[in-house]
Image (cartoon, rainbow, N blue to C red; front, side, top):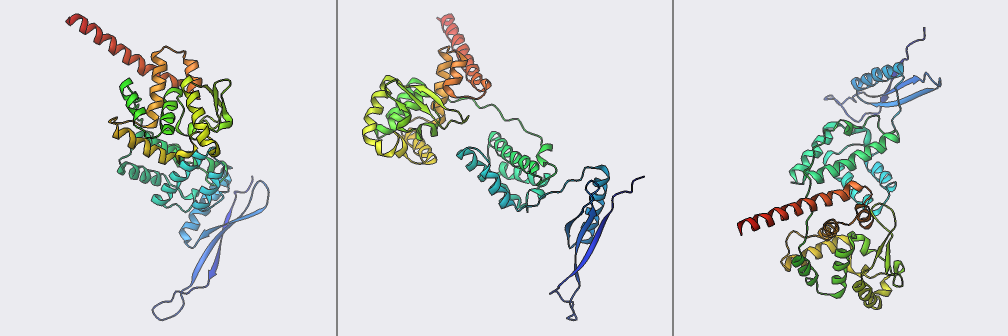
Length: 352
């Protein structure tokens, strides 16, 4: 019968600066665990700190896991080092920025030493902190997904053995109804901006369905006036997307080309993405259009496609959705609106 794996606790005396009431130095010890790997026969060791009870607990745990064949060495790194290394491996500038913000928030609120020290109670504490900030459930779930992804990557890199987010009970967020702009509101939005460049930016968002940064980073090299198309290089789905130009946009972009050729693109000079969003919201509020963001223009474009009975596959390609289910959402809301309009027309006809 094979001997059970055994783990030894090594005790080492440390230099102590602490003294008792008589002025004599107090003995302090640190503990280290040592064992022979059953698979390789090589001696291994790990630090167990200065608490003998903790060292004995780790001793029993490692002996049990060695006997079961489930023991796995965990690479212990500081939280800040883990965040830095994890961010470098994320694809997309926007994803990297958001992931760093969320992981830094988690670190500031829960103060974990490293990924190996993250507990389920810390996730609960972070969730309570997010709720105290009065964030929507949709935003809270998004932040939790960034934490879960980071810990999953830590597990793959042998920094943790178990992801505490695996036991998390997700709260379903209420589906957000897309904001749709009426024809009158669209006219107010276009007229809200003080410069031709801003008006062109809003009009192209409204008639192309592009995301905010897809137009802000558009370069003149990606605009083909001869064929009447432009190519978006930095899509959310990490794929290039070619879209047609409206006739009015061709003329407008030719005017902007003379003014912004040195900037490299028609809308590069508008500023950073967050600053553009703030200025956009300020302009449309002054024009009397409430609850309207840059995202609302894209939602209105998608809803217009649905109301015009455009094929869903074509709409998906125009919008650049990775999943058809995202596109279907706009068609469902548009179908509900059309049904309500039909009922109203029947009611008015009956009343007449």
